[in-house]
Image (cartoon, rainbow, N blue to C red):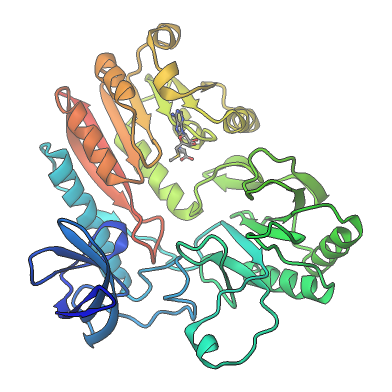
Length: 469
Ligand SMILES: C[S@@+](CC[C@H](N)C(=O)[O-])C[C@H]1O[C@@H](n2cnc3c(N)ncnc32)[C@H](O)[C@@H]1O
């Protein structure tokens, strides 16, 4: 162990696992756990720490003494700088292994409930180009690589269009390519940047809050439709039209070309008026004959193909016969509710975002589904006796909460309701495990199936079937 600028250097640590937040895991000589960036299980690495806590260190592999057999060559030239695909240096079968392991360990260690045999994780057929939505930021403060800085060359053009450097709100990585969204995603991003520079338009400066161009969002759908949304900091009608017209001309396949003028301090769009420039203000996604209308603000699962698999597993676990009253909690735009509706007597969906519920109602109408009802509200407030009296006691509950899991009051109400089955879909198996423990007095876990929605990252979705004891 050596010290450098108060940071500890551990030499030749063997990486034994992949852990929380996708970091590699090793043991320090003093027995603490070391969470490491830029390493793969099986590597032997030299680690420089940047954080020390009672039970662990955090750090980064500064060099590798022995390369793991699990390693593969990352396909993306931005790997290591971009925060997007941190597991691109690990073979896909190993990524799946560690995702499955994380789910199993969380359910066992945090849940501490009796568990059935786990079904093997369902991998994604597409390991790249699987996302249907991407958001890129403009910046006049491009992130410079170490090589660029070392070269001593003055880089005059600091314009960038890409992703935030992890942990740096004002530094943007200028993308040459991104392997997450299928073409014409890269072509559109490259064209927008080149055209903006040709027109001499200013890229945003976050620190000073100035500049014209802020963000670019691209949405694609399995029906082949494309949505492009450009966000500007202020109105400049002439230049805005020049840029948008050029995009429309170059990419006639864009079915929805939108813009927004946002002069707020942050670039979130949810409270902004979106303007239509060309085409329609929405695109359609299709799943098993169902159509879902998606506008610029709609939530839709970002990996459409795997969302279909996830929903099939959810429906399969619910094993509906056509006679059940189903609650779909945290319903979003009601996709799961509509997906299971033909197998149920009635489905009641609840969601806190009013726009999402509006979209859910519109989509149900579009799909001629009459046995679904949607309600806006915060689950912990609306899921009360009045709600149950109005809609009846459910036979099956499907729940798909955000990363924090379900509020304790919601879990308490589920225990009170005593539905025959609960199908719990989760993007965070740690909070899911906590909730399973709370439900354990009345529910037994019968099935567990993890689904990989996000290859090259550590994220994993997990579906659990609970049945009443
Ligand atoms: C993981 S998403 C599930 C979306 C949906 N099931 C789907 O597959 O598209 C979680 C949803 O819960 C909603 N949500 C978050 N907190 C909530 C709360 N306290 N009450 C109701 N809905 C909430 C979010 O707006 C989001 O739409």
